[in-house]
Image (cartoon, rainbow, N blue to C red; front, side, top):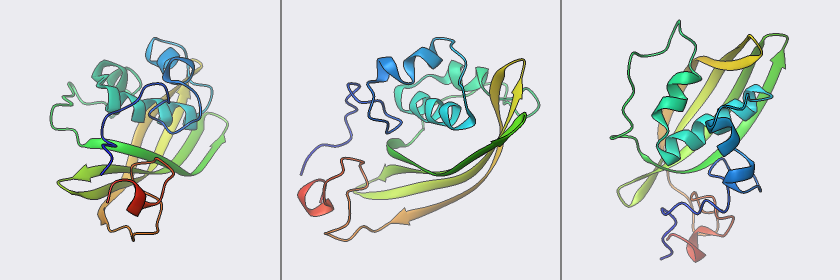
Length: 154
């Protein structure tokens, strides 16, 4: 079995083909996200790399928690953007994030709402659903490697 849980930051955790330093890291350092999807990807990466301050900073004040701990956060392994749109100062992103659950896989699927204020996109809220993944041997591996499950994490 390949250890897919260790994050290789040569590739950005958000699933783009770019390196972390060229993709989400500039946003984590204060650069504004150009689109709701870019913000969602950077927020997912922030969960992976443990950037709770960034998550709070990009959360709209009307729904932002007072504090956020990532200690009990799942071991996130892949992100898939299912749909993304923006109209004026609002945006939506529908995504599925996969994580490890013991020796299996779980997912969080969310339809997220965003708003742009003073030129910066902010996460407002999301309608979420969770479940367990049961990939077949010939399905793509949930870890995001692109390989078949039987040749990767099975």
